[in-house]
Amino acid sequence: MTPRTSLASWKKLVAHAKDMKQQHMSELFDNDRARFDEFSIKLSPFMLDYSKNLISKETIKNLVALAKECDVEGWREKMFNGERINYTEDRAVLHTALRDRSNKPIYIDGKLISDHVQNALMQMKDFTEQVRSGLWKGYSGKRITDVVNIGVGGSNLGPQMVTEALKQYSDNNINVHYVSNVDGTQIANVLRPLNPERVLFIISSKTFTTTETMTNAKTAMNWLVASSFDQSAIAQHFVAVSSNKKNATEFGIAPANIFDMWDWVGGRFSLWSAIGLPIALNLGFERFIELLEGAHEIDNHFCSAPLEKNAPVILALLSVWNCTFLGARSQAILPYDQSLHMLSAYLQQAEMESNGKSVTMKGDKITYPTVPSIWGELGINGQHAFYQYLHQSNNIIPADFIGSVESVTPVQGHHETLMANFFAQTQALMQGVNEEQVKADLKAKGRTPDYINKVAPHKVHQGNRPTNSILMKRISPRSLGSLIALYEQKIFVQGIILQICSFDQWGVELGKGLAIKIQAELESKSVNAAHDSSTAGLISFYHECKYG
Ligand code: F6P
Image 1 (cartoon, helix red, strand yellow):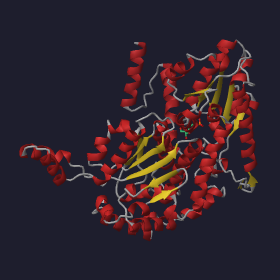
Image 2 (image 1 turned 90 degrees about the vertical axis):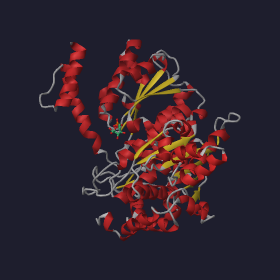
Image 3 (image 1 turned 135 degrees about the vertical axis):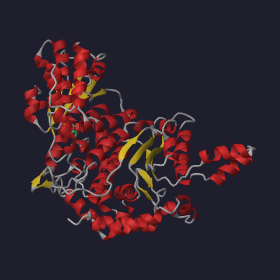
Image 4 (image 1 turned 30 degrees about the vertical axis):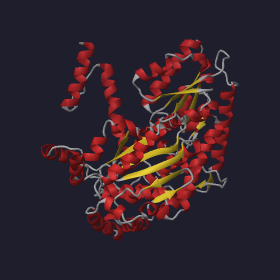
C-alpha cells in the first residue's frame, strides 16, 4: 500500500493547508454570498451545514481527490459486499445488512446472511410482542413491567443512548433500565425499587466473557433466585444476546432465550441487531423498524451520492482536514437537544475505539495525526462550563452542533431560546471579534480610555473556529437512525483515508489482562513483587486501609 503521505492529493493538501491557515472564515463569508449553498447538504431527516469550516472550493476539491486516491468508493463496495475488511480479525463488516430494508439477498463468502437477519428480526418481534402484551409472565404469573439490560460498551451505549433519545415515543408499557458498571452501586440502585416477579433481564454480551457484565449478571441471578427460591424461575426472567451460545448456556440462560449475534457485527455497531432488544421492548417493534429504516436511508445516500455531496464522506474529510492537516487534536459534540444527552458518550466509543490507533491496516507506524479525542456535553450546559475555552484558548477545537427545528417536547418560549444559542454560538466561533471592534464597542458604551486599554485584549475572540451544524427536522426513531448511520459511515471513511483498521479494538486488551491478575492479588491480600513501585504501592495501601 502506498503510504498516504506519498499521494499527490495528500501533498497538495499539505501545501494548501499552509495557504488556508492565513485565511479567516469571516472574510471567506464576506467574499462569497453563496457559501452556505455551496457547503451544505439537505437530506430528508436533517441538513448538514459545513460552511463554517476553514475551507474553500479548492479544499473540497483536494479532499475529494484524496478520497478518490484512497479508493473510498472501492472500500465502500467491499464493505457492502461482505468482504473481510476487518483485516486483523479476518471478518466481514456488515452491520448495514441488519438495517437493509430492500429485501435484496446479502452474502458473505457466498453464504446467504440476509435470511438469518430476517429470522432474528422475527424472533425479536415475537418476543417483544409477548412481553409487551403481558403474555410472557414472570415466575409468579405476573406480567413483566421492567427490563434491566446488563451489558457494557457497544452492548450498552447504543441502546441506552437511543432509549434516552426516544423517551417521548415510549408508551411506558415497559420501563427499561441499564446496568453497565461493575461498581455494585449501579446495580444495587437499579434493583432496589424493582419487584423481582416483574423484572426481565437481558444479558447483552457479544463475547459472553466480559468480566464486568458477567459479574453483574451473576448478581442479578442471585437476586432473582433469592426471591423465587427456585432456579427454574431463571428461564422466565433471563434472556441473552450473544454470539457465544456455549458460554451463555453454561451461564444458565435457556437456549430458547438466546438471541443470536454474528462476528460480522462489531460491538459498537450492534444496536441494529438484537442488542437493540431493550429499544424494541420500550418503544414497540414498529418503532425499532423505523430506526432501521432511517439508517438504511443514509446507507443509500452514502452509496449513491457523489463524494462532494455525500454527507458522511464530507464529515470524514473535514475531520481529516481539521485534525491531520490543520492540527486540531480534539473534537466536541454539542447537542442542543436534551434527548441527545448521551450522544457524545456514544460517539466517543464509536470513533475513538474504531480509529484511535497508530499503525496502518498492514501494521506500519502512522506518521501523521489521526483522529481527535471526542468529548462533549449538551450545548447549553457546555456554554456555562467550557465554551470559554472553545472561544478563547490557544487550542482550536472543531465542534459538531446538533439540534432540532421542532422540539419533541414543546414548552412555550423555550425552543427559540435554545436554538438562538445554537446559531449564535456557531456564528461567534466563526466570526470572533477583533480588538478594534471591541474598543469601538467599549467607547460607544462610554468607558474610559484606561478601562478600554486594560480590558480590550481580554474581550478579543479570534474566531475562525470550525463547526458543523446538523439541523434535524425533529428527533424521531427514523431521523435518529439516520443520524447514527451518518456518524457510523463517517467513521468508516475516516478509517479508510487514515489507513486504519476501524473494526478491531486491540487497545482494550492489555488493561483487561492485567486487571484479572491484580484482582487475584486483591482477593488474596497479596502484592506481586514484580509490579512497578507505583502499582505495588497502590495495592499495598489498599490492603493496609482495608485490612489494617
Ligand atoms: O472492551 C471493549 C469491548 O470489547 C467493546 O468493543 C465492546 O463493545 C464491549 O467491550 C463489550 O463487549 P461484549 O459485548 O463482548 O461484552
